[in-house]
Length: 478
Image 1: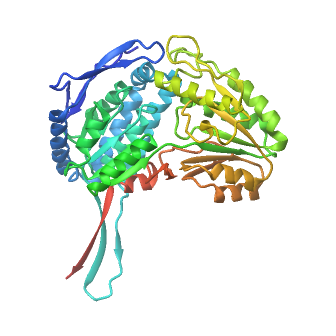
Image 2: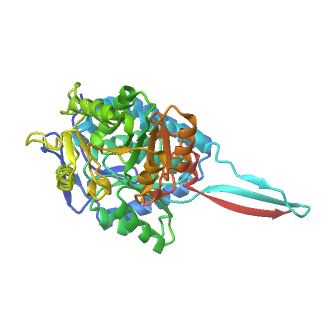
Image 3: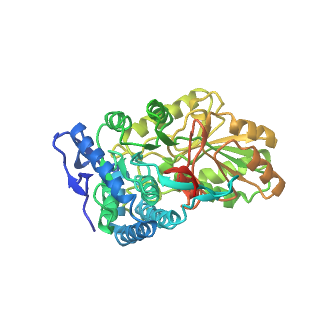
């Protein structure tokens, strides 16, 4: 089994520790032991990355789409060949069970494959002309060098979504990956480099997030910004990008409602939702959180779901028996405790969980809350952890009103056997993604994105490729 990565920046085709000497510790969330020192990029390194991305774009945009696709497919194959090593690193630094880490790496390979193929189909179109001898054409072109910012909860897939889409479109990219989980993105970058991506086309930097974003985004070299992360940071970066007229994709937080109707198979739905809620310890922007349960099945669902959460094996992600690993950092423990305490003070009841596990690492009990009033913070703020809130409803319209009341609009879930109810719910839920009777999100071929404070633009699907392209209109006579 591999050891932890030798950490570095990646600029203009070379691994480098930079010249500033600035660094930070990378911690294992299972023990809080130091895994390695991570070098930080300062202005000299960022200037080199910008120059490399500018040079790389001029080379890569001239490579025909079929050759680009071959390189991307080779990178995907390398991810699959190296899945065990990269997944081991991912679990060490992020905490998720090794099985989930492997799934994430393989998903990154699938995303890369999909964009490799879709890049070959980035067609323009011919528009009928009003005059003889005139040809009106729309040509799709790469937007230019990209600044991408990805989060720690899915450090591989979130980075790959940006990298693969940008490269398939013909762009170069500087990706700022998370300082908490740097090793697995480095492993992925090696796959792209070893597959034959030219020097300068991909650049990877780490450092103080505000310093990097406030230096890269205003640069005239950068033409597009893609960010995945929290709502407050997303709003700040979108504002900064707007000052410089940069195109942006913002995939921000959520607070997903789950509508469960009287006609469902309670056991089956509960089992599915426990697995979805505890995936990555609930540190998922589309994690189901606010459960609206219809009257007749409320008690049974709460009891069944609570039993499922209680029986979830929490432990070190490298233990094959583990089904939920630690939270990513101590800040998440504090956030969970604060929100749960506030809910209890306002009348909420803890059916199971609610506490930190032990005093080593960042382990937290899978938690179920009931009788939580709408005024509680956890009903209005994304918990980003293994906490589910159970609410009762009678009529569909009541559930829809409560589901839609927050400023978030990323993902929503519903379970019903009635086709009319399913259609009504799908039409009425105010979110960018709705999945009914299953978990159908985040596949490479489907758009992923939200509305309202959850952001705008998409990653994945045809929309995810188009986000890295501009339409040029050419009208030619003769």
